[in-house]
Image (cartoon, rainbow, N blue to C red; front, top):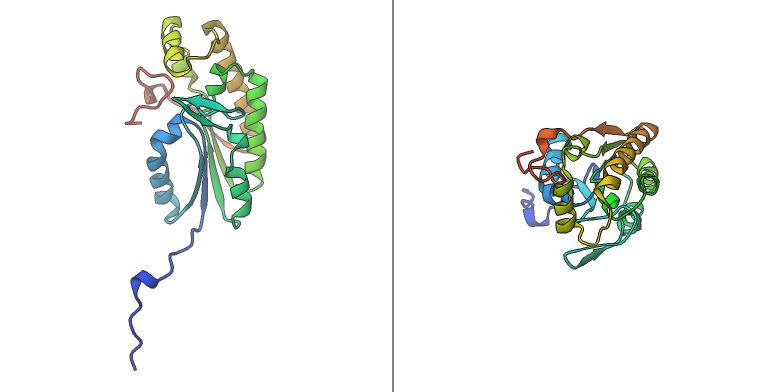
Length: 205
């Protein structure tokens, strides 16, 4: 006797073998398809993907960009969802650390928020990648360019050019220390990844 052929529509979908977590802001939004495709090339598909991102996203406070309000990454529902899901080998990307400078947060406060994320991730991840701030590009910004960017992207910000530049260096130094402490892979953004916009990666990059 021949067994009837299985109906592909009734075949169960394969379960993800790995999980990827993305934490960031507009660069994650703009590159999410590339990020997922790259991860699938490395680890195969399907993947269980969780992301906390959004234009102007803060790591620790509610932000509002173009009329859309988002909770801080620390306060969002990703963490509860992550705890509910079955255990899987997990990798995470922590990026876009810098928006909070324009929101007026101190370097210490930003570092504390990032550290809380790393503490939560360290308990479930076998690999964490953290990106530094794009200092090479930021330090080439003039005062008038800074004011234009602040007016366009962070219109309510009152953080001056004189305050933002040293704070960026301090935040980056603290992020570097945190990455080492929590055994994360640290990646340095390269100058040629950016064009006129010193915050967002060029599409080609």
